[in-house]
Structures are given as C-alpha cells and as structure tokens.
Amino acid sequence: MDFEQRLNLRHLRAFVAVAQHLSIRQGAETVHLSQPAATQAVRRLEAALGAALFDRVGGRLILTEAGSAYAARVRKALQELESGIALALRGVLGRGRLPRDLLASLTTTQLRAFLAVGELNNLTLAARTIETSQPAVHRSIREIESVLGAVLFERTSHGIGLSRNGKALWQKVRIAFSSLAQGSADVRDHRGLHDGVITIGCMPLIRNFVLPEAINRFSRLFPAVTVRVIDAPYSDLIHGLRHGEIDFVAGALRPSLQFSDIRQEALFQASLCVAARHDHPLARKRRLQARDLAVYPWVLPPPGTPTRERFDRFVKEQKLAHPSGLIESSSQVLIRGLLMGSDRLTLISTHQVEIEVRLGLLARLRFSVSDWRRDIGLTVRLGWRPTLTQQEFLRVLANVSSHAGEGVPVWASQSPG
Image (cartoon, rainbow, N blue to C red; front, side, top):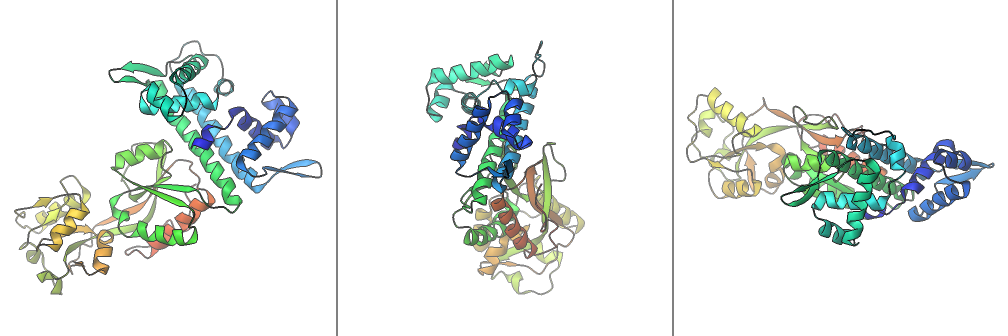
C-alpha cells in the first residue's frame, strides 16, 4: 500500500473530475484548479502508474480502459474518505463545512501518519514505520484534528489510542487506500502484467484441499501473482476484511453476520464424515451401525463448535453412552496424529481429510452423516469489486469447488460485486 499512500490527493481529485466531465477545463473548475494544474495532475498520475488514462480522439478526451477502471477505484476511495470524515464529525459541535470540502484540505502524508499512529498507538514507532520523524508524525495528526475540528486520539494507559470517532475514520481511510491499491492493480492488469497480490483470509473447512488446489491451478496460469494466505480466528479475519487488509475470507459461512458492511456468497456445501486411520478395524466393514462406533475412543473439536454440537446430538439421538477418555482439540495436525497412532475416530468435514484419504493415511468410514450440510464460500466487503486477476482466481476457486464433493456450487458464474 506504500505506493498508494504516496499519491497526491489533489491529483486524484483532479483526475476524477476530468474523468467525469471528459474535459480538462470543466474538471479544473470542479476542483478549483487552473487548467495547467489539472493537466499536470493527470500527467503526473499517468507517469506514476505507467499507463495512459486518457486518449484524445477528434479533439475530445476519452478514458482508456485502464483509465475507466482506475477512475472507478479512485471515486470509490474518495467516497470512503468523505464517509470517514462524516463519521469522525459525529457529535462535533459547530461543524459547518462539508466532508468533501474538508477532504480538500487534507494530504496523503497526513493520512499516512494517521494510519500508522492508529495502528501502532505510538508516535515513535509510527514515525519509524513510515520513515519520517516523530515531530512530523505528531504535526500531521494534529493538522488532521485541526482541519476536522474533532478529537481523533486520546491518551490511554498504554500511550495514545484512537478515539471512537478516530476509529471510524481510521477504518474508512484503510479501505480508501485499499481501493487505490485495487486501482493500481487494475491498471497493471490492463497492461497485461498480472503481478499483484491477492490476500485471502482462510478458515478450516477450505484450507486442506479446495484452497490449495485452487492456488496451485491459479499459479500455473499467473505465476507472477503473489497469493498471501492468512490463517487466523474468524474474528481476526473479519476485522482484517473490514479494514481493507484482506481481499476476501474463504471458509464456512455464518448463519448470521454481525456487521452490515460485509456479505457472504456460497461456493458449495460440505458434509461430515467419520474418519479413522486407513487400516482401522472399522475401515473394512461395509455396514456400520452406531453401536459399532461407540466401541472406540474419539478425538473431537471442543464444545461450542458446530461439529461438536452435531456429535453430541448424534450421541443423544442414538442413546449412546458419551465416550470416555475423549480428546478435545481444534488442531487438525494433532487430530491426524492421534488418528494415525491409535484406534480413535473423529467427526470431520469430508474436505478436511481429502488429502489424507488420497495419500492412504486416513479412511472415511462407511457411516452416513447425511443430515449435516454447511455452506462453504466467501465473505467480502459490501461493494467490493475484484480486479481482473482476482476475478480469475475466483473463477478457478469456483471450478475447484464444483468438483470438491457434495452439492453444486451456486457461486461458480458470479463475481462478488
């Protein structure tokens, strides 16, 4: 995001205005610049991006494909910044200027410092991160507070932290710079470079087979693209998604969403199976009853997880004694080790043991758990629009999902906005 944070906000505003009117004169008037200044802004932006954003045809300006894509991203980024300013002004008395007018008084240098301090809660560390001086960082955040007339930081026991209004602005600034990064990627895609970064938040039910397979296939098509996979708890992934640090989250979908600025798209449905080591005594039996499973010890996810709830319900429905000597763990590495070194059984998603079954390490027992299905798919920010390269990755992911097992993918021919 470093490149985006060094862009000139005035140049971006001038470019969007010129793109809207397809006229240097009208664009310059809209943002209160001279025509030479607007022309220079567009030229400097084109030089920074390494691509033409406009063509001249018959004396008229026409957006190139790259220019049209970039204009949409910049427009979105400016809207996010204006929205963030409006949120930062909640409860501020005597405000009179519009967010758009206030944005015209801010710079990317100031916003860059604001992001760093908001993330690190320390002026010195923030200065070191963005390679400037501590007084410069302090001056930048005070200038933002002065322009907005709002308190964005407050003293805490750990140093300095974002105020409530500051947090709202910080999120929007992060998303705005993420949109600008998407715009840069769009331009490079239109130049045929396809060398960007895709950042994926990964959850358990997709990380063992579907996602690795999709990444391998995609990387053969686009070897220069970096795919960054973040494996973390759901709450951390959603935080990263909502703040523009993650492009999309892949895994099990939630029955309901806590935030109104994200949405879900189903890829396929996963089912549960009973798994054991490949040479387990039950692996050879063709007809298994519930009482056959009750003889053996189990390793299961902890209470409160959907799989564990399904197991506890199964025990109750079949009127079985709850297994003694139960091992509880969410670590698939540990579960696999326990299964391979004992007669233990586990209840697990079919996709989570796909690789182990293919390698002959584990076996899926012939016992139906047919009444459990869970939607697996993507969680994205509301209004998120993938780049051309990201669209290709999503297409590959949908294709892998269509052959992943149970169900027909419902997302295969769509893109998330």
